[in-house]
Length: 260
Image (cartoon, rainbow, N blue to C red; front, side, top):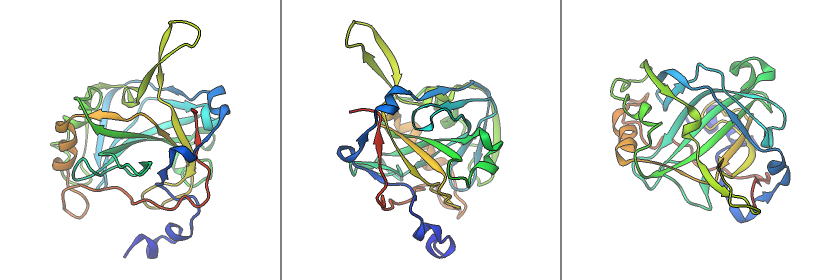
């Protein structure tokens, strides 16, 4: 049974995700620059990982919050992060940028604190905010190694474990160096981004997500990508690969950009 017959919103929904982001058609929104996106995470000292049969999930215990940008003054708490990836480097990301698919996509999932919990927020129109990070082949990523080095004992679906290790989720985000127009001062800033109103990309596909897709990708090493592709078994007892949802129509939605 397909999602189309099992979950009607997959067909009739007007805010489904993922989409192809066409950069030249995105509308620059000065408000996103005037009220910058703020990320305030607390480093984890114990990392809890779960193979849920669809992805590898890192549950967040310490308080971490997202505000600003398209979220305005609302505060969203980080609940977990997970990934989608392909069987090789030619595919894996859920969103595409100008038709380009990346090797993987990292999602950091947050819920609106006005609702009190992830469960209560997940079906509300303004309930969730997800940061999307495109992953491409590159050098060993130090922060992600906490995950990639510990997948060997999470092979089976519904297996879980906790590692005593430092991990700041902020270190998984893409940063760029910006130079002031009026001086030689440089600063390390979170990457520019696109944003649009969308949905969860796995059932129940609630149309409750403010997506924030970073322009700059992050690099994972060949070893780290292969750890995802070859160490995990999905709920159908196959290697967990190509666990991404295919693109859906934009359906007239506006994609805004934080940059010209």
